[in-house]
Length: 419
Image 1 (tube, one colour):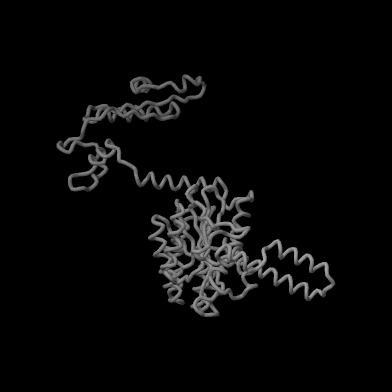
Image 2 (cartoon, helix red, strand yellow):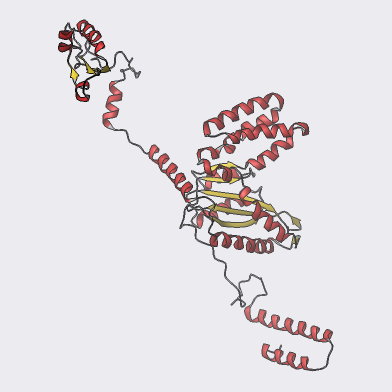
């Protein structure tokens, strides 16, 4: 049976007082440390980093992993990206680190979750996104990612109601891979004009023109544009101040570079759990830095603009028609469902003669010289008719009169007497 820790420490202290070489002292310290670790493992019931059902307690400094609750805030924007790291799984090197970063309703960025898995596996994406939903993730309006196999379908299933924005940077790389080398600069410049438009209408119009133009010289590129149109232009319905940050996954590039820098030291990890621990420490540090910083990713005013757009969309979707407005629209429509001509509006459909209307009063501002014209016009309409007499009232604006006199209404009878 090994000695307890206090006895081993006493023996080590006595050994240091003796006249021995450094090599013997270092070897003795390593031996005693191994004995201490073996005794601790026997007492705990598990070796360091070992997961067993016989574990009775944990070592000093151990912190249980708890999943952070995400139900406190809404996250209208969610970024999904991955960086390729190497770890052995069944004698193969296949895993990648997947990172989910969200922008909360207050405009701050947060690390929502991370995992290690195969990006082309639909079951992996389903489990990862459902784990975020289980933790309370909600309020998603747009999900940004690359076109990973199966991700778009999983996003529509798990995040119902959220749009999917395909990263324009990754899409451009895919386009240039099929374009001839001599035409790559031209193709890239033409496609960039789509994202330089001021509003959604001009963006869609320019996209159609670019696809039609490239269809003659580069049919493969035009086909890729037509297939990716919905995903590439999803950003256009959101506030313009957010466009540069949401039309790609570039906001995660610095985070991925930091993960790569830290993991390149180990090169190949023995298992995915080891890779997850190191990448997780980097992401936790980045999350704390964003949380403690004063700078927001989106300003509070722009987030209020996004909220107002969402409220307006919900109001339009739930609007109820006013009964009076519905009746007026029904009156202006004939029994066949067609809108009545404008010259029949206001007439009784059961009578051939026009309906009686009140007198029409016209006000004109002019000089006293217009009195003769008013008299002639009134003389034309002096005969009674079904529509009633049309009395023309002029405002006198002759020179030399006061403001009240100039703006005093003059009747048609008085104008006839003057004439």
